[in-house]
Image (tube, rainbow, N blue to C red; front, side):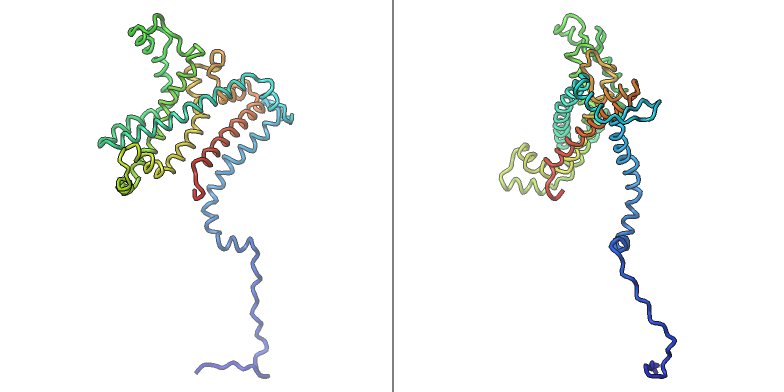
Length: 321
């Protein structure tokens, strides 16, 4: 039989009232609800701040200082930026070369990568061709530059000069890597050859994920030509891969051209014909050791790359992405 507690005069008066828990604050409620999720994000956030936010912040601060690595940084305000844009003609030339390099090689590399992936996706034995096109991306830029130096060597034993002289197009060897008219185009050609592998592999993987039922539905709607299929079905279905390829190309074209330029044309290149922003940064950071000035160049390069990347994101992404 259940015990009935008495509430009359004879009841136990020593029992203490149950303590009421204090209401949780907003921060406590967030940690109680999402604490485990934040714990999983913590390693990424530590690396994100340690290797991205803090270095960028330090570079921005150093860009307002004079720092030669022997003396403590001395704040000099906007002097580095004023010197860059008003008195450093080589920096202005490097911006022009970098933008020309990126505007030509970026779209051409993306278009060629997609078309190659599209053609190879049509054939059966695609693995061998995929490996052949991706192999240059596995090799370092300096090693590939050594190979291309033989091709564009300025004597008659260079493969390009030998071929053109045998065909009768030129009578004397041409200095491909010294003449300012051909130096930058040669670097752009080598960069295109090396940069297509990564995007080619992404596009080839994306092509194999397109739903084949869309092509059958397209035929019902009157789409018959392969180019129509590519424009109306394939490209819209591969928007995430195209977006990744564009961002990858933007970052690569503003940063990777330096290694090829350094290996083929040297630093500085003759008449600064192949001088890039990264070449200017390397010159002031690791040859002249003017770290404050080099930090200002790095900040300008970061702003250009970030701005172009954000523009590409706004152009290609939708509201749901």
